[in-house]
Length: 288
Image (tube, rainbow, N blue to C red; front, top):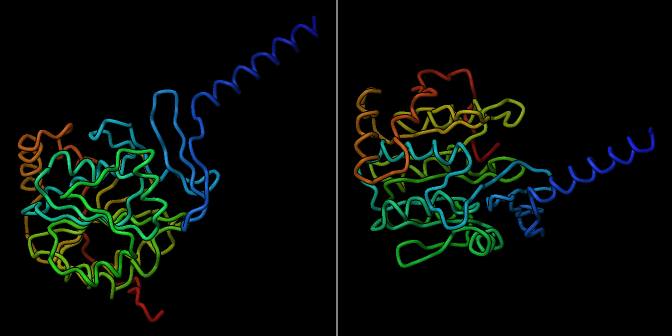
C-alpha cells in the first residue's frame, strides 16, 4: 500500500514538473552587455525577457498583438500621452521587448519614433522573439542613451526613459546633468516619462532621483503602478497648472480619438501625486 502511494506521489510530482516546464519553455539564453538574458514562452504564447537566471521580468509580449502591454508599468506609462500637447516625435530609451514603441507606432502611425539601446543584442532579441520591427518612422539606434540625448538635433514631444538593467537605472541616466540634457531635448509642451523602482530595497536612490527631477523640471508627478514596485515619473519643463479633472478629461478624449484598448483616465485611479517638497534629499550629480 505504502509502495503504491509512493508511486502515485512520484507520478504527481513528475506531472507537476512537466506542467511547469510546459508553462514556460526556454527560447533563448545568452550573454549580452547587460549580462545573461533569457527569453521564455508560456503555454499561452506569451514571451518574457529577463536579465539573469531568475531576474525580474523586463518585458512581456504577446506575439502579433501590439495592444498587449503585459507588465503593469508599460500600461501606466501611457498616461504620458495625456501630458503632451502633441505626439509627433517620440524617443524611447531602452528597448526591452519593444512593447512601448510598437504600441505607440500602432496608435500614432504618423509619429517619428527613435528607440535607443546601448546593447545591440537586446535590439536583435526584440526583433527575433518579440514584436519589434522598424520602418521609415520607427528607427532603432545602438548607442548609449545619454550620448544620444546630448546630440539630439530636433526636440521630442515625449521621451520615455525605460533603461533598467539587472542593477537598476544606470547612475549616469539619473544625474542632474543628464536630466538637463533631456529637458533641452524636449519641446516646451512635452513630457518625460520614467519607469522607476520605488522601494528602498530595490532602489535606495529613489528619493534622491525624485529630488533631482524636481530640481530640473518645473512640474513633477508620480503615478503609482498597481500590483508592482514601480512608479511612473512624469516630468514637465513648464508649469501647466492643470487639475486632475482636466488631465482625466483629456486622457478620455485621447482614448477615444486614438482607439486605445483601454481608457487612459483609469490609469490615474491608483494615485497621481504632484511632488511638492523633497528638500531633505540630495541631488544626484555626475561628480559624485
